[in-house]
Image 1 (cartoon, protein in one colour):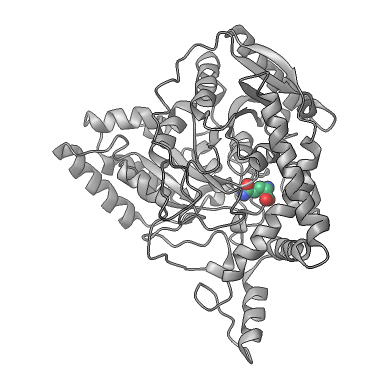
Image 2 (cartoon, protein in one colour):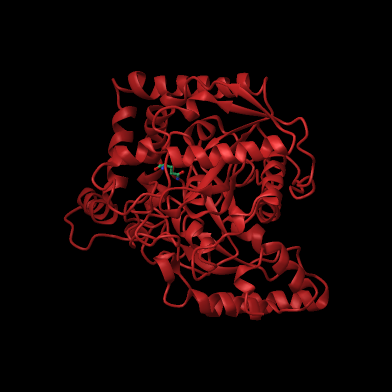
Length: 486
Ligand code: GLN
């Protein structure tokens, strides 16, 4: 089978269960494609580990104990700790770090049968929107290697788009699953905050961080999401005490009468015409499928940028204090005393963007500024969540662009971090509210680059989002298009 790398998760699972291919054959194909590390998507590959997992999966397929995704490969964002691969979170400070355990999400996907292909490049500690902040070099967008893949899960998006992995994990704190999925023309979903355990996910901003799947289609995302999610209360007290759900069960539900809210703040100035045209096209498709478009307002959309860029760095400044050269990763060589060791280790180990966020975070939490910045931001965060609840009185799901533009060219925003921050405007609101959100391929814009449609649902409505995305994908073929040569 020459096109194994272009098959969906679902198709691969079927072929594996009917023994038309073996897990070792599938893994071998992907490992061959990963040779030379195209697009700099991977940070750690170990074919021995992958093949050992594939052999174990073949044994389970043979003796009837196979999980639903047995033998299907997946690659993990380097923010998830793994026992069998190094984990760096894209940072020099964790160079060569080996975790003594697997993150819950990694472990759950393995239990479902998935074979790990290795670890994927990302912005350092998931801070970024372009994957230009990785200590291990940027990831190229497979659609145009002169352009960024988005971030921070840029390696995940590029790997799926380039056929290096049928699916990947990502993490989303302020858009890091949705935006790279949009930039690379794949599908990704960030579930409701708490759906997936954060245990073993290297913390960036703990009140926002969520794990989710990235794959070609909504159907594949549903299969992974069902396997990833579930209560893990002993290890992550914010994980939701809810039964696991079969997110694939309702994919084919009719959209007749579905009310899709269109927030006017998502279509104002700043939205590029090419993105708008693609999003409008997808909305027309929804009307044809029986959905009704309802104008709504999310009045504090613009405030989500300052609010997020206060709260996330504040939490990061606390979370990243553990990287001090004592227990993890890098330690400076020449130092005079303990404080000097901390200073030198952190100065050497962290990149500029991480340092910027730690400083911003420490500043907004400091005495005298806490009330003016952090406390105000928390209050507005609540109002942003309230805006969504008001909107959901009038609609079932909300739709709009994922990002104001298609993927930009390397260096375009270089030296101007605020330009990157502003581009997060449409993904931050759902993150601040803890709502599920996804990106669905909706067409192509400037330079032939993919455009994603964002769907936002109310709490725990992932199944509804995936249903809406799947129906769009039954009616369009944007998610099936591939970069040239893939
Ligand atoms: N771009 C945002 C940031 O830099 C979001 C990143 C994320 O979701 N991890 O913080």
